[in-house]
Image (cartoon, rainbow over all chains, first blue to last red; front, side, top):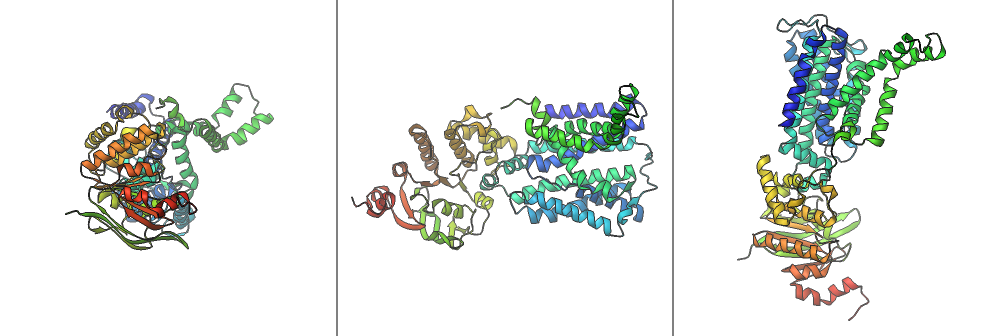
Length: 331
Length: 242
């Protein structure tokens, strides 16, 4: 109950935030990224955090949603919402095929297979004609219910809605039989099986829920950005970023992935747009033409992956339960 | 008339060329406390794994409650009413004691509240209720064994397979566990009990099967088994002729 109220409060704050900050497309854009990564990481967390099945290929489901939606809108002029539903179906098919084969095996096989499946999906999208190959797909015109889809606000609220739904599902799972069973599977598969838990059924269930939500986010992202190619929606880097967000925030917790996204996405944004380097130059602390100034300008923008890496290593070493673990009472 | 609840019919289990269990047959009566004993490596746990669905048998049949269960998965076997514990306990470490037992209770209910009620009742009956909110991984070995027992009992089994449930426990703890097991039997469940400590087994079992090197060496009532020279030889080594 406490958590439902917390979700409502945070969703409420997020909902009025654009009204307070006014029309700043840049700020709204960053916030959309935060919400999207929070939702992606939370969706991954259902499978990885609760069921303990680490997927290293969630980009496949994100890309499946994005590509299905874009193809159906651009080539068949289908309603965006129906296209998103179709994306979920495609993602579920990929998930079902992967899961029904690989979940029979124990250990790291699922993780390895998830990378392989994601690569197969990526290479297919890169080489087929109907996916636009290396050129990707451009969406020039789209409309829904007379909403202004050139503005970022509909997508801000769309992402927020999916995040709230994802958190709601997670919360429901935690207190239901399925959630208990997923955690039992994570803790000890033999014990789980001997207590009457059908391992592959529940792992597949978690994967399908996770893949559906991920696909929905991919669809939303594609319509928001209006251009997709394999490096934008099917890259291994995306899969890794989703996992790192969850790990750094706190795997297997309700709020960990959200916390991870709130901290990491703006951090990446700051590094990418070289805010730090610019600030140092502006303050006159570093001359733009000095060696250090050139170094900062050239390299800091590309350093966000490096910073992610360093934070991850520190987290694994000192915060195995993620940043959220810091605030939790040890039982 | 006494009903057999479990038939082991010429069961063999090979691992490659390694014969772990060889042509074993016996029957377990309803409401019996049945002991499966033998020295280390006799094949007791392998046989348990076959019965509970973790290993497919190489040949032979396992009939539980008039159903062949050879080809069933462990979770299906559990839903037929057979539950097992593990020699090396398997607590769901980061879950609380209560949550561990709730996982067991979910085998017979879909409702979280009902699972919680069953779990609380079960924790009371094994004397773990004070530990309900502790993380299962933090318990001592004696309490973990009790938790293991509470968790399988929450599935309301017709038959319980207990793999060295008293192993590593002191005298008092063993007595408590044996008391719980007697209670469970008196409520109508059948117990199959692996031990290699003869004392614990003879104290509680109605019938005993002795395994040695994967084969059945003897079977009978406890007092017969303890006097059987072959059993004594198997336990003490062949050279002893007392």
